[in-house]
Image 1 (tube, rainbow, N blue to C red):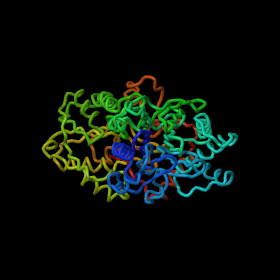
Image 2: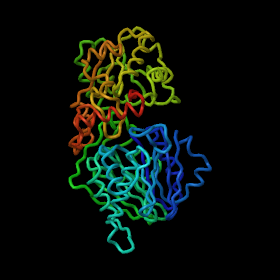
Image 3: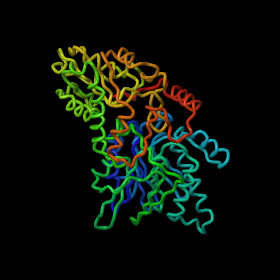
Image 4: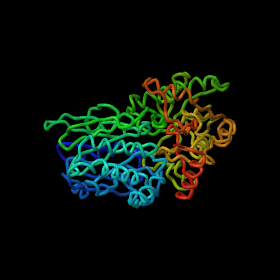
Amino acid sequence: MCGIIGIVSHGPVNQMIYDGLLTLQHRGQDAAGIMTADGAMFHMHKAQGMVRDIFRTRNMRDLLGNAGIGHVRYPTAGSASSVHESQPFYVNSPFGLALAHNGNLTNSEQLKQELFEIDARHINTNSDSEVLLNVFALELERAVADVPGHRLTPERIFRAVRGVHERCRGAYAVVVMIAGYGLLAFRDPFGIRPLVYGMNESMAGPEYAVASETVALDVLGFALERDVAPGEAIFIDFAGHLHAEQCAAAPSLNPCIFEYVYLARPDSVIDGVSVYDARVRLGEELSRVVLALPEAREIDVVIPIPDSSRPSALELATRLVRPYREGFVKNRYVGRTFIMPGQAMRKKSVRQKLNPIASEFRGKTVLLVDDSIVRGTTSREIVQMAREAGAKKVIFASAAPPVKYPNVYGIDMPTPSELIAVGKTDEEIADAIGADRVVYQSIEGMKRAIRAGNPAIVDFDASCFDGCYVTGDITVDFLHGLARSRDASRGEAVSADE
């Protein structure tokens, strides 16, 4: 999970990209970068940390130009501790290319080997984004090989994207700055990771922005045009002309369902579905499961785990005809628990991050609602806090189904051995986190709740819930190799519980 943005304007874009990245900060807090284009010259600044800490006045002054791209990084492959993994990535041939990527290539190692042995291109980092950049650079070089003077046209650019689709597997939403020409954006043929574009009609002519979520367009004053379709590429030249073409042979829309459950901001719209409305409907679907419980009549209060579970919890309380209360106060100055390196640190972080309001728990049967339960570490701490605050009984409800499988498309889930739902019954999970009962959303209910926002979505990437990998290239051996790689690179797997 990362956030990307690209803008072609008639004035300086450094501030706009910075503001856009701030709205996408929830998609990655490890590192951030901005590259701007001043004619055929690129200017870049990137570093580890949060957007507000990386870009100082002196950095912003150096980011000259009327077009640019930006990235916030959440590490899923490669080293989380190296600035060299930060994006955008850059190569100077052909033309000069800068790329930022959200997603994960599933055939990255194969491509890396091919690039070195066949194409004589060397990859300097462990990032699959650098692999993707080099594949695109090679395909672009081939697309103009027979053109006098190697003149680049939109048709040649789209030919290169078709080459990327043929070679790359996995999930990718991409923005590329081509020196002297313009901004390219494209999405994988399955439409797993989100990508939208919008337009602003300025006095000097149309300006365009591309971003991971609509919220970035909203804050910058760009009117949403539409989602970039699966397999589609759009190219915006520096004069402000937009070109679009479908570049995949058999595209199909399979958006990542975890975007709606947890990742995206509630005020975003992804593939025609309001994230907020989807979470409300998840609460409606979950209420059917809760109402069937023998303990349903005992519930005194419904309390969300801040923040993303609030819409589901409020709708659930309404359907149950029970009070909705804010039982936990969140300290917003503590980092996300899923990037904490050890269990002791995660446990300490949860206590620093959430503090219960004892009066909302004392003597009550409490229904706690979270967006999902992944590793269970955070859930266990929250249940314990509720009991220490005086709860008589704790029922823990998840707005998502049990997470039982790794995610290979850009979300850094723990390995199966660390997923609390693997090999356990609901009763055993409840015992593991200290709750009196655990209640899960059904897979069918989850899909129904989200598809209601756009019936044209035939299916989703719900692989972490159902084990079905839409790209069709994921084997048991691949998953075992992924688990070994993640354990080796991080020392231990980390959790996405929050």
